[in-house]
Image (cartoon, rainbow, N blue to C red; front, side, top):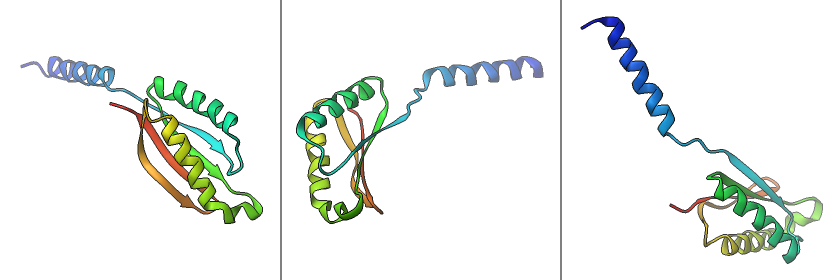
Length: 110
């Protein structure tokens, strides 16, 4: 077998493999513990658009100043977002506290 032909066929296989794989981005939506319900609905609408484009979404609740004592309220906000997005998104990473932020990752349902 000709080595040039072998190398060409290998490159073609790699190109086909790259075509078939799906690339996704991680989009981020930032919230605060005092975010009201209407604003949450708007953010869920944005989240839905990101999920429809097959992107993962990182939902972040930021705590500033004395809000750090309201971690339970932040968890409730993330729970509300997860419930509203439950029909088109699945929780990939449950809420986790990292410093002054609480994050959760949602991905498209299979």
